Image (cartoon, rainbow, N blue to C red; front, side):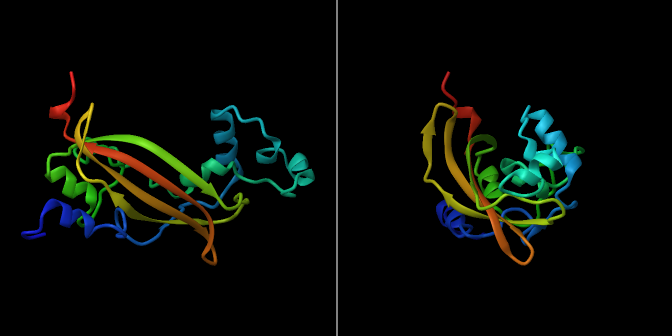
Length: 183
């Protein structure tokens, strides 16, 4: 990125796609087996997720997916080989991202700090979910107990055909230099 300062490089990436760019399309439609496994894993006994008769009597009128399951539909299948070399990223990334710029600047450790969901509506069986993710903000350098670092926030928008927004997720991490951690 030439002679630009780190702040200029990072600010130029705000609004840019995270990862490969473009929409990520779910490899599978919203389906009952995945919903059943999710509900079991989280001990969520809500019958609108697994019982067709109870779901038919509900305000939904049919089976729906748990709302916080939204992000799972478009998650890539992790490529385990080389995951440590990718800093824990489940897939190869292409091109310059805020995370690669921060890695080169010495902020090599990552700590997830928070995630917020906005659910517009529940997903129904058979729908194909797509997601697009862009960097929303990158903070100035902060001194934290973990070391000096920057908070990176991205927003993922989830849609179903034809471009109907069904939810959004705001996700924030701290990219930090682990050599400066407080004892």
